[in-house]
Amino acid sequence: MKKIAVWIGFLLLLGLFAGCAQQEEGTIDKGDQDADGKVEAAAGGEIEAIEPHQGLNQDPVPLKVDRVGENEVNVEMTAQITDIEIEKGYFYKAWTFNGQAPGPVVVVEEGDMINFTLKNMDPAIPHSMDFHAVHTAPSKNFADVEPDETGTFRFPATKPGVFMYHCGTKPILSHIANGMHGTIIVKPKDGYPNDDVIDREFIMLQNEWYKYNDLDDFSNGEPSQVAFSVKSFDEDGRNTNGDTFTLKDEPLIAKVGDRIRMYINNVGPNETSSFHVVGTIFDDVYMDGNPYNHFKGLQTVMLPASGGAVVEFTVTEAGSYPIVTHQFNHAQKGAVAILKVTETGEDDGNAVMSH
Ligand SMILES: [Cu+2]
Image (cartoon, rainbow, N blue to C red; front, side):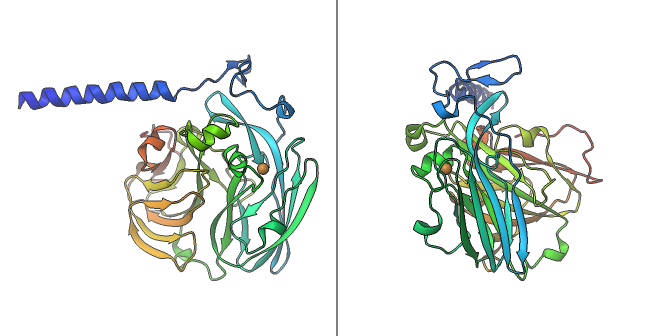
């Protein structure tokens, strides 16, 4: 018995050392911090922005969505260069849609025609838009918009679901990995079966980050951060960027007994998400968000790169429920959020359990 205890102690110690070593390796060169705590690129270092983007940090531009007909909606977005704090104190000069990475969530209805406008505020690089929610000829409608120009395209959204969008300009991997990704939700015209009993809805995205604008690292490396973000249906709601800390420091909040729906999307660019909420089981799951793809009683939902789902579950007890990708190497790199469940549905200020 004593021998076993010693062995367990030894193994735990070994695990601890391995954990420390991993932490060390995961540390990245963040350059020098200035007085504001903002990170300046290290001279000649790998996070120095490309020349036309140096010193450029464009303020986020709000997404514009206007319904102009019963089945017609105008969507206006920007391509822009904006600093995103992906880890505390580390700012990535992201290529973004509307100054968010992932970009803002676009919500339309099944059967809508989308009149889409992309204003490219990037002074140096063309960008474009590839919505997975539409049927169109990519060569015609996913075309590049040159710097300081505006492009307009029309797409029909004929299938309901939770879809990825991303920049489709070559090299596509560089544009997605630098931050040009997001989610478009096409609401089913007849809704989901449980619409009447859902108490709270969240939109959660997973993405990963690599060395700044390094196509070789994007192609062959491992992510340096894997991140969750939340997005809102409302313009004034909570929209966070893909980072490693916000959703731990400021958890999602729910009330005991709430039936919760999450629209989830893995915007990659490369990795799979094994989406799991610790302490619960998904009662109902609609793969890719299509009501036809209905599953019941799933523990973990696998989202391929670009894949989405709607998951529904009930929180039965007060406490903190970590939301993770069950690929724990990625949880270790940041992909953990906390859902805090309280008796009142308000934040009670109590400490949460991390993971
Ligand atoms: Cu782009």
